[in-house]
Length: 313
Length: 313
Image (cartoon, rainbow over all chains, first blue to last red; front, side, top):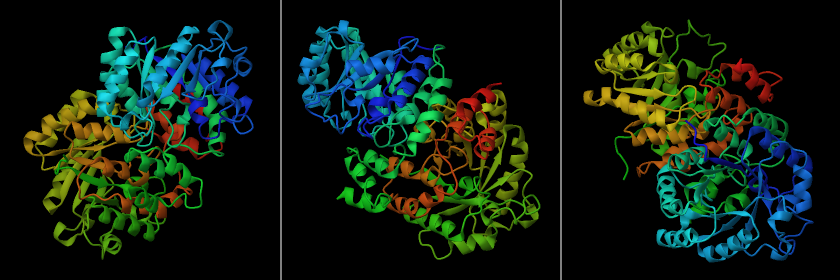
């Protein structure tokens, strides 16, 4: 039987936007939002709410900033609207520009941080919570963190008003054993405080979907996915696989297949993501994909063996 | 620590050949064989040993027949040779053409069958065993078999001279729970007889690698994979991921990366395999990929939503 507490958060536009500086056509953004609404998805993350002092609007698309006007424009007139999420990075937001929830169409603000910055993340969580938003904390690159540091951070988060804390396999390096261990560890701190555990998986080793299932098995109730697995580098757990796995009758697969066919397949001919060997290599080595991104931008993009030799030095 | 009993069987040429009627260039076949030898892989399956009465050599390539002369030609002069495997299908072999093992460079013959044909498979297993070959039985489409039938077949196989019996997820429809269950069930019959359990996974739901790991966890010691995941439809568990997961120091990743870059990437521009939505759809519906193969050959190859509606009727 399905678990009604499970929420699917589609972050197609936010994580996918890391490939193209969030320069999506407005038609694409609207099509993705409409498809997720038709599919019965719980939350849609439209992008970041970054400060225009940190990032130039000349270079970055509107999903990088998610101004209220933009969010209203791309979500208006859609029935059965999913809740709307934006992500914020520490030190890259303009707090003066954040309205109270009552004046915003955004429901959820997700604070991304590394383990060393949990205190800063909690400060932001408090800020958004006080303004009336739901909040999560997404601790990135957890595969490179020391467990005592993780436990200290989780203990602090358990005392904060945060709603959900995410296991984030930023480098796509983890196997189900590690997901098993971390979901249980996060739960030990979160569940007694009536908070949820989330899972954000990357696909470098083709384990994004499998690791998300393992997190579900261990009690994670907030699940990130992206349509057709779009996302920086190897991409993410595909929304279409996740919906078909979850048995909740409210989910519908067909609108997702439709938007893949009409929007994602054409986009995949302009920008690349998925199982591409340099990202597989950074995944198995538990490294940030930046070296692979640099390789894929140059003329040696298919020199896999040399890349592997270089990165091992 | 690694489990020294684990054997990797690379079936790049056999399963990949299902995409192109086994019409590989001789250079490709040699490059794949050389790479697997350098990588320390245990078995390489070069193709089928089909009867030329069943399949015309005008249409099918040499890996469909794996004549002794051909096998010698493509494997000669390679150091640290993996053992050589061929697959046979029931009713499609010419028994008169099979030499004794002492006159053959083939080490292992794998008999593929559906559960209803286990008796025929055992007859073939006996035939090849009596000639001196190692044997396996690969029971296909196990996700559509009834468990009492499976148990009856396993009980018979346990009494045969077969060396290994494979769990084969032909449709790529199974989750780790099913793999867990089936590996244990196969082991219950095989292990007391000192036989091994094998795993052959397909990737329709991006679970080929994850399901192979689950089979390892449950005791499977014969693991199929293909380089860059090549194989009919969605393809298979990728050899490069499997070698990097297994900790046996005898395995080397670099030769596999090299052959991906030189041979598989160019080939992937001529024939297709991998995470392609119609194969994902047949996977989630536990169906043979034939409808998806037909779709991909026609002008409506990217009409995913319509395909899903049609196949559900």
